[in-house]
Length: 346
Ligand SMILES: *Cc1c(COP(=O)(O)O)cnc(C)c1O
Image 1: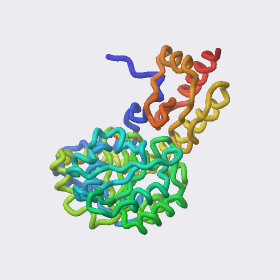
Image 2: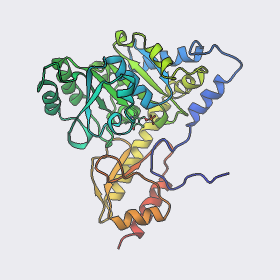
Image 3: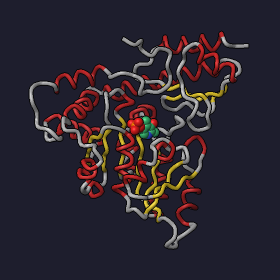
Image 4: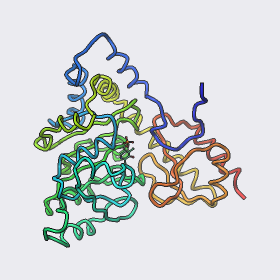
């Protein structure tokens, strides 16, 4: 058996399946059930998500975030439209053009903004600078919550975002690959970060918060979900044994495990950020608001950590070091990283 990856802060998708999701999978594995989503587990998981958001929304389960984002965006656009996103957005940098592909050409237009959050003035400029027929017509604003740089849009900031999208006639999509971490960190009801703040569609990440696989696409404006089931099927995203995508959601929603695990990951990141920034030569590059810690390290420290077997990313955003915590991160992991970094001091 290959050894488990130790010494990793690479990503929350390195972590395994949380016990509550595993238990729910196990319970769903009793006998036969109707396929393609017409099973009791899927109906219950959809209802659990409606309860979570305290509204009657349309819910679809797909295999991954790239599909969730790109199919959601495709359903909001025609091929001649454009989608505005931050230049560090996952849809722009890490989805291999899936949004453009599934929408048959809808163009992503990028804007800047500090710490991974879109600059509203730049959004407005991008939308209003042209109104002629040669420009891809702006149709959607997509933001990431928490952002790719581990920061959060506060409910107040979301209200400002919504004010702008409403004024400009844009739909609002949220890439919530780590949405649970945002809810836990901001400590507000999920409704305040979604439909109450004008969000039309949310990609709700399950994988990174402890599910084996799968994300939920949640349409708060139910009209926008028109024929979304066909879109999923055509894209190869309709699971035939759907109960094994949906039951794990039930497992983490029914006993609040989702937010407990997300809080744990956020707490780990906060601890790690505090201890790392106390080491000389280590500089925090973005505020640690969810479960990611971004630091600038001297090159010898990066090389030294890698030599000691540490796995972490240096390709996100500004190219500094990202240490990502998950539901499975423990104090020993944090201690071990901090100790190694201290020993690598010149
Ligand atoms: C991980 C992630 C996704 C989804 O990625 P998949 O690998 O396609 O599941 C989407 N958006 C963000 C911000 C992510 O971090």
